[in-house]
Length: 88
Image (cartoon, rainbow, N blue to C red; front, top):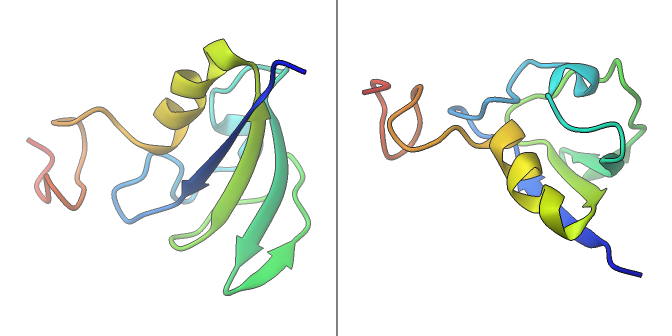
């Protein structure tokens, strides 16, 4: 089929924290297929605001994997995160 399933977790340093699915900067062809919050499935729509701990499954094309990961994980040295708590 030529598709890739990417699992991403929203962390405290995640670019997706507090963002609506529609604002993640992914391509229209990237599909957030499932979401899990507190161990339970949640309905996923473009207005869903993601919280720390949320896990999502995104279906994309092989070239889209990095784009999807970038929507959830900032490049090292950009913004706060576990490895970079002060965003430097």
